[in-house]
Image 1 (spheres, rainbow, N blue to C red):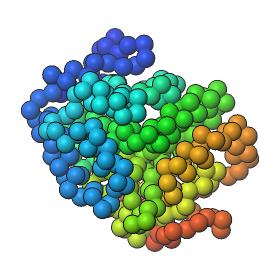
Image 2 (image 1 turned 60 degrees about the vertical axis):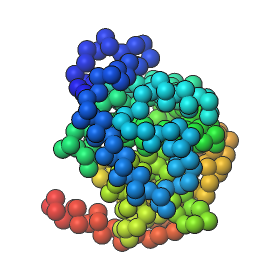
Image 3 (image 1 turned 45 degrees about the vertical axis):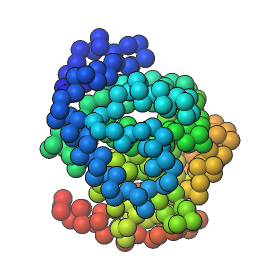
Image 4 (image 1 turned 60 degrees about the horizontal axis):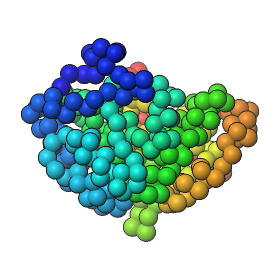
Length: 289
């Protein structure tokens, strides 16, 4: 299927959405989805939070081929009142927040090429749908995502989107959760990546730090490689309570006077689950020098 960047801008509606055009996917597109799905489905049990696997079952995402957003949304609507809408790639911040605040998840419709199978700079339909949508079938996480969207609309008016983006990055995209059975994955950027699924849990390189809202929002992140730090929540209930129940305006003002943390830093106040060696990051720096 052609990349959405090649489509005329007029194809998008006022809210940034476009038709998924499911019937335009080729056999190769569906085969790519199946290959990615089968690879992740084989390695995620025992690594991913059980709520993610439950979401796959609830939404019947084990069917072959790229899901049709209409059928997927019908099942998701029955579970938590959410739906999936197609967008031509990344959308403006306010458009994104509006969708989340109204329980709509914007998903890119294009699928990566074989050359991009193991690394993709921009999110495709596999990252957006396989990575994000199963947890939207969980009522508590679904409420968190809506609360985040509403918080984003407020942050936009306060000039604080950069700080709030760190919350999304370190939870929705690259979050870990501590369970009775040990650390598990839940962030979409991890669960949709075969290599980072293993790295985030098993590699000695990254720091793994207990979730703290202010600490997290002071922490820079890497957009082009594995993370040097992962934040670990205790439960989705904790995540929802600490975000939906927080007045972010005073927090933003407090953060304005504080320095950022680099991606590999550990603070004396951190609850450190794993003090990483940072060996992976140092090796990459040596390779580039």
